[in-house]
Length: 493
Image (tube, rainbow, N blue to C red; front, side, top):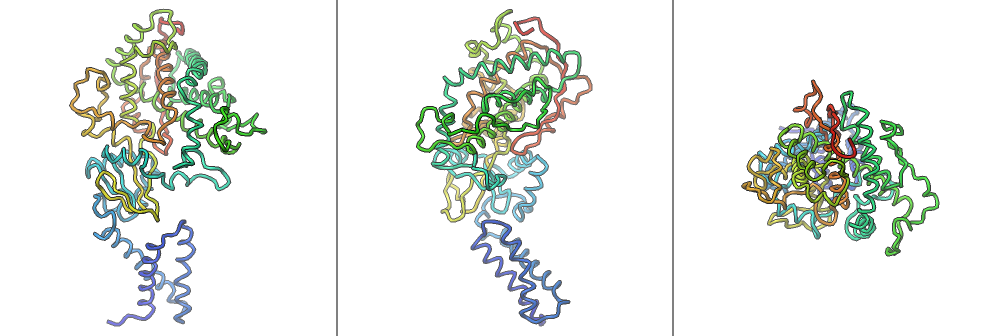
């Protein structure tokens, strides 16, 4: 059967485009959006075909290009052919984007790993990994660099914040953060935690007559505290009972800033600029407040859902802090073994960053061998904490159940591999504020449980609350409705 020349030329042009874009992948999808639509028009003109055939040329051209791409991505010739995964995910990134847009990518990853194992292909050039030796290699020193994901939302006029950096640039910025969050500095920050946590308790005392959305108040507390830490104050959300300014990031007092405040020791060759410090400050406020509020909310939910554990926490607090003693006395927090175990178990089941951001073998770089498996160039690699923490290989039995006893010294659980516990990530890009966060959580929860008896509000569907957690890198949580009753213990009663 003879095909008209324009059909053959359109088919050939589609195949040539697939070859060229595969071999010389552009840095931006905008290039393809500009180049592809004009080619059928140019072909029509060069072949001197009537304008009425333009639509047919478009159909053949884009149909051939699409079928060629699909065939290649599903073939054994694709570099990721060895990795199992759903056909739809192998064919198009749109499937993953749809899951991400819904906020439930972390649940999707968990289902895929339950079905396919520790290595899953979640996109045409993307895999998800929950094999602990591989995760450690990917995230630790000498591992994979951060992917383009971290740069996608940054305006071109805004300097990259620390979360966007890799290599020496990240190491230089991290040194400043490390000096600001030493153990000695954290002790100095304790007064800020006490101030805001006391304010939180005072606000909640005024709410004992009504249903209280604990997520709302913990969010306000976390934003106020991180505003104090990052910008020296300026937020008063607890006082106002709401986010009046929409978390408007004010930088008063920084108009003549020369970087000395971020490098008081004078150890950096190049001092951080105003824009750089502001960008990092915004990261601190947004990321640290969200993750801490999420961890606090989840710990409360798990304890209220398991009354026997909640009672045990209160008994421990009453033993450590007898009547009249200060629950903010951090010298006694080392005695709160069971409360710390509950926090760890909440972090395991509800990690503050469930999906995490990808690492990548960038185009132009040689492929990498990770835990005996080849990762080709151009591959994005996710290491989702939510899936890893619920893997029975590392936490069993009942990896999806809340059992704080796992974290006690005399634990007899079948599997309890702490190397698979990464709520604060791993390696050089792990959470620089994790020690501060744990101190903050112990102080807040000690004061909260010492001051109040807490129960779910009547009519509140507590079992459905976890499904309200949507992961958009920061986690959106639904209301956690409770009733509070003052306890006649401690100075905060």
